[in-house]
Length: 77
Figure 1: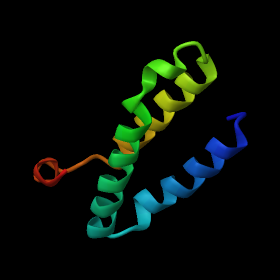
Figure 2: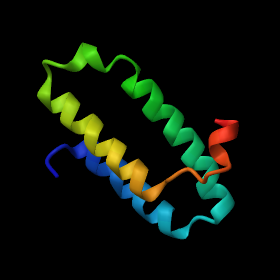
Figure 3: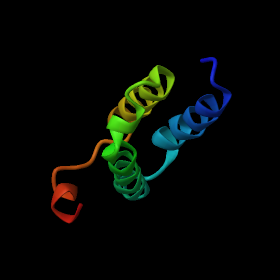
Figure 4: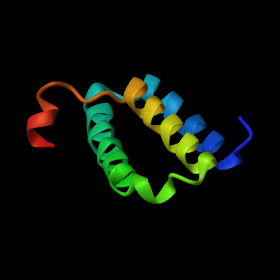
């Protein structure tokens, strides 16, 4: 991973996804998914910036895999 900042984010998220309690992970999942919603809100502004689009896609996949929302969380989201 060449982007040092994204590497740092992933380095923090991975062990947290493994070691945090289920309640803490669900709280983090809600917050991270709200972040993704804000990040993707104006995605059309970044259509010409391939590195930004690629990074947003990568972060979305990481959060989706390591911090999925439980079915009952969608109602409160």
